[in-house]
Length: 476
Image 1 (cartoon, rainbow, N blue to C red):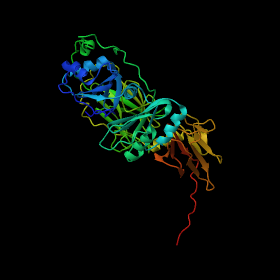
Image 2: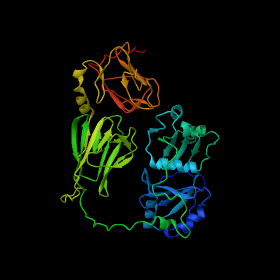
Image 3: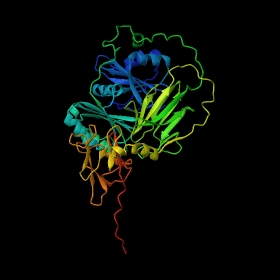
Image 4: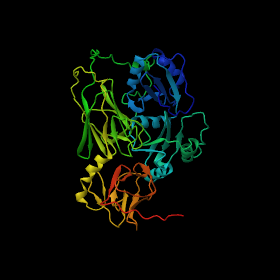
């Protein structure tokens, strides 16, 4: 399984003869205890990677990486995993104290902002963070590589890039190096940008802040507790589960699980087809494996949300709500873990369910009585009438339609009615793109049924009648 490439402050070392029984000897060779040495060990296991972070010559924290997910753990968990795989490959990566704290924030924190470099102005984000004066860690994710920038008081001060054979940008000015890395060295390739608040992380709850007494070893200090007797494995089919597809408070379809993987997207061959321009062709999937259901975002453009939090992948439990644009998918699975009646659940074909634009328009159209003329339909809000006066969208109190978000400008977009009777949308600025039917726009005439997206809010244009097209001159 590929593991994420994390930045270092020097060349990684693969210690010879590394195995669990010899870990303390390896530790003494590569870490100079008492001399403020720091770095991290990487233990590569069959299904995940384990990390042990060293600060000042002492174990300070630990973490794990499984697929694209990072998480913090106790230090004892690292040694337990190592004891279970005593010959697993071990790597030591030198890292200064600043980088260790940045990595611990990355493993233990939750990003306050998640964007991609192709949809926002990264320099604008840096300016906004500097204006706020909040210390942050910026994580740039590109394929399996994760690059970091440490920003005290919101201003980049240190950058750590994962080398790939290309010449690293000069580090005299951290902000210039960061922007050059994003826009020049990487050729403008799309990268995910996550913003974590805070620059320091506390030690793990089981961290030892002093060297073990003479003759005592780290492997003894963190001796794994004997595992409890394993319960006999009970083979059984996938438990009954279903997905209820909703638009607002209205149920569109209930879809039972009949195979271990259910695909969601705009592609016609998806198990659940959502016909919306903002939904990616391969948007998300739900898999049953290892006795659990797992929701996975397939690098969609507009994200997959679980209980209102954007996720990459996450376990599902009964009653969880999945959000894909304006659609809500309610996951239900019986809490009982008893084996279901035997049935060929892994082989029965699953029917494709379509959530089409006509059905969406029919449901949204039910609100026309509240606003008989041209209007904007917003899920969970009253329709916004459109008149000859401009309608503004933004985060400020002066905006007609309020949209929350740090990256949404006070007046982000405007809808006006032209002399031809048609409505026109204009993007006024801001770090979040203004989109129409999933396409980024700066100015565009609107038609009935167009879906306007600004940040997390979607607005559907509903006209009482389609304006007559303006006559075009005929050229000879």
